[in-house]
Image (cartoon, rainbow, N blue to C red; front, side, top):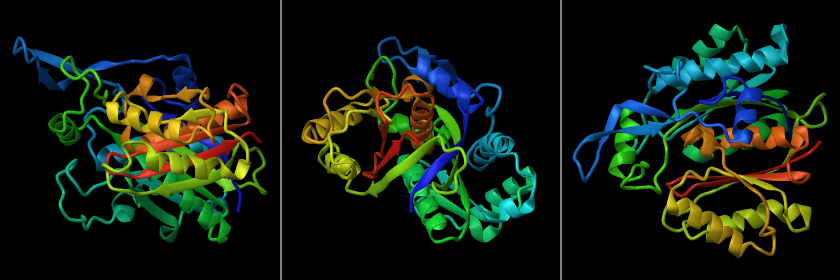
Length: 349
């Protein structure tokens, strides 16, 4: 079944509404700020130097993990609710809510086993109660897959609508690379951008919301979703771009012509990501034109982890709807350090 994106919400370091944030990203606006809670040591002078990140200042400070997810998800949910502007409980009973979140298990949060916490009870139900949304618990879902979580959530949304479980789906992705555990993990892995490592990432944070509806019943679609796909491989196998090139070919196969539109991706300054994308474009040059435009939201807002793919979807959908995308179709790519890859193709309505 074909689905469409009909409403957007965004909370990031350069804007607290979707229109503001996307306009700032398009203009190349950036608001980097020292992260005082995590100073770095200059290897030459042994003096403390600030880590530069992209926090949502005045909004998310002091919130970590569950508290941060609820605080920021509530913000984008409020924006979506205002845009949808439906007061009847019947609408929300036919709506599903999917949260796209980072991996909990692994080195980032120093968790070795799957936690027993019920995120529906601890996070999603309080979120809906606070927003006064009558979304049933059985229509609440969580996708914990890091950078590709939003793509996986969109796939699940399409399945729920196709199976007539619900009429529409709210996809909300949120993550922060600025909590102490994540910063320690990134520093230990040598991934933070600093004078000693100019090809590292600048940590950021964001939350993004997308309303997904069936294309045949969507009254005002912003963009159609033509293709969604997620693949997995060992983390070292996909860094030369071979796996990503196959995903690119699969994404553009339905159009039966060489793709020449925008590629919105989660490039964040890390060398392995740049090699992966450049290698994939070279290997898939028969399917993807070498001069297609690369759009990188992380230039403005830093690496936003599990929220990054949703941010890319919002940037791509807005460009298509407002007419400044370079063609009628755009591709969104997502890549996780653990080996997961995701791709989506959007088209102008």
